[in-house]
Image 1 (cartoon, rainbow, N blue to C red):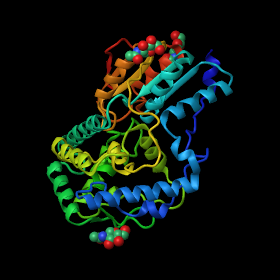
Image 2 (spheres, helix red, strand yellow):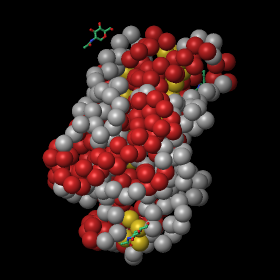
Image 3 (spheres, helix red, strand yellow):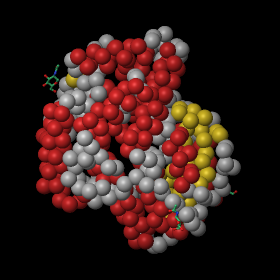
Image 4 (cartoon, rainbow, N blue to C red):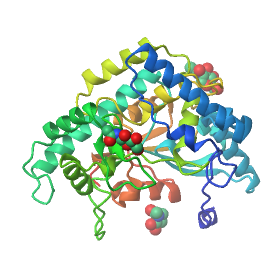
Length: 387
Ligand SMILES: *[C@@H]1O[C@H](CO)[C@@H](O)[C@H](O)[C@H]1NC(C)=O
Ligand SMILES: *[C@@H]1O[C@H](CO)[C@@H](O)[C@H](O)[C@H]1NC(C)=O
Ligand SMILES: *[C@@H]1O[C@H](CO)[C@@H](O)[C@H](O)[C@H]1NC(C)=O
């Protein structure tokens, strides 16, 4: 059995990479529309923009646009498993990969040998609750970052009231977009208030560099440098990427969401309630984060939902290892605990720490994942590791 580990296969999910990627009009995508419409007129403008964009995708990519949902991706994965010799599946999914994992387990539980879900998403909740759990996790992690940085001499914003400065930055951007002078062709020349939290979220994924790694730019130290610049008028680090041609990395994820959630027919009033809830519940980051994007950008989407939120009911699966940190800015622990309820054979390993996903940290959680994938040894339920 060990021979199967000599070959690791990374699937290129439909709609991205080299397998018939989704193509759309970059010009329509790059038109700037607010994802936080306040009036019926602004709302109509957003819906019209989405419909024009979707029409360009259908024109350039055909009906594929309506079939990139996660259930279809799980079925592709099964086809690849069979084509590779029909051995049982060993799978490690990180972040959105855990959505694929759960969809696969639901359909083909009996074909799994080992499955790891690291940074767990829960597809059983309504769209609003999914967002609330994510932005509460994001807000909590940002507040933890601020406390950590303001008391850490090595952090660029040591001694500063980071939350206050951040609130002031958003208030300023609300009046007039903050310049992004470092952006030439690939990102926007200025940044609106809503783009700042949306583009900052990924910067919380990794707190500290791994031992021996000298590059701190993708860690909380790098975020502090970027915020320092933004507080001084240069928000380049938080500027949105501009689509250069008919392939753009962000599109497929958006389209998956348009088919995995019931966004399309929401009213202007319902969206405004969502915004007000977010502003009250997450006063710094204001609910402007990844799972909000489809809420606004899938309005008016022309294809029916394929994989609406539902309880996964994974029965008949072998033990499945779930892993989550306590403080995750993208897939909060509440989602992992909720998914565990849907997988009776699941074991959840907890990491007492910050950040999104644990495998790449090469710590104790990562060792536990490897031991399970190779030897099928599982941590005891409720095990907590520190790295
Ligand atoms: C923001 O940048 C766009 C071009 O990317 C420009 O059209 C617009 O005038 C700028 N707004 C401000 C306030 O600088
Ligand atoms: C879950 O799946 C099992 C096996 O397919 C089925 O017997 C059971 O009724 C399902 N439970 C729910 C709540 O759908
Ligand atoms: C798997 O088990 C063998 C034998 O006990 C052990 O030597 C090896 O380190 C284990 N592999 C992992 C990845 O933990």
